[in-house]
Image (cartoon, rainbow, N blue to C red; front, side, top):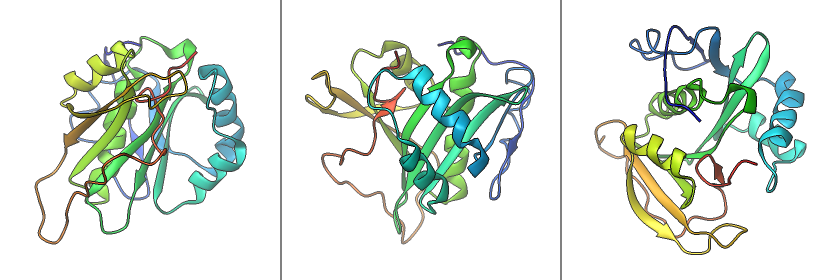
Length: 204
């Protein structure tokens, strides 16, 4: 999946706007927005096109779409979903988690994953988070390279985390200065929340 960025994009959100330097660097005709309930069929189609295992159910996707502690983002081109990202939040925590990021096969190599990553970080900042974390399969070298180039650092490893027995590498990026009264929680082994897809499950 490519890292090339070009042309123009906009982020439509209830709470946050596109970073001002992003419009010059994004794939033409692709925009990122907050997912809506009407996107459920497209999200389900994307699940089946991208992942061979560990797919989200329709019920789970609906729960994320309704949840106040989740932000579901979609990248769209010509009315068709090009990718999606899910970011999770916890009350009174300055830590966000990138639960999932996925790009439709026909959009590979066009920088959509990088757009979604930037949008996920913007969503976390809008909720006053200081850092964002994710897990990625140790063999998912394109994703690992993308995260490192985007400023993420590895801080841990979970042995045998995935269904295939593979280890998960844990990454973190600081996205805002410390704020009094807000702290990043260190919870040890993550509960099975962050398949990461890009940053966890391996797309088929």
